[in-house]
Image: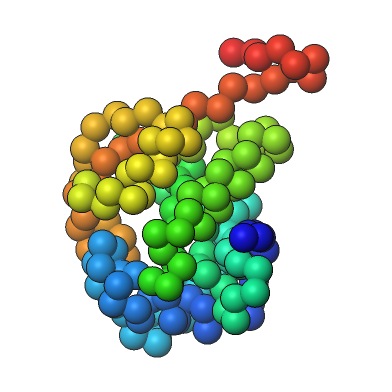
Length: 174
């Protein structure tokens, strides 16, 4: 199975609206939203991309539509901001290793580009698949916390991956 990450863009409003309206996709993210709210979310993502956040659509070879969205974006945390990784996949693409591979690809890209020193994950506490993905990618569990998704409170596990910097010679620097 071939998986490709493509930059999120203006033409992805339909994808966002479909993901945000899918009850299975949104079951752990506060529930579905209507078209107007999905448009606001899309506009916010486009502004975030313009500001340097990473949003990508996930494509699986031979599939008639994108599998979903994956991103590393700035999120408020303890009076500042952290870089958070998150994804949403349509039900027919779940439980096939697609999200895990997309996460691996995105984290590896972040490592190669030296863009991030830490990436955080906030997975709903009972979301076994999401918690399993970040655990397998080497994220450390820091504990539970309260977050919100589009204004809806969610109890999450807080994960963090520390990415060492390299000095160009292959040596890790502090």
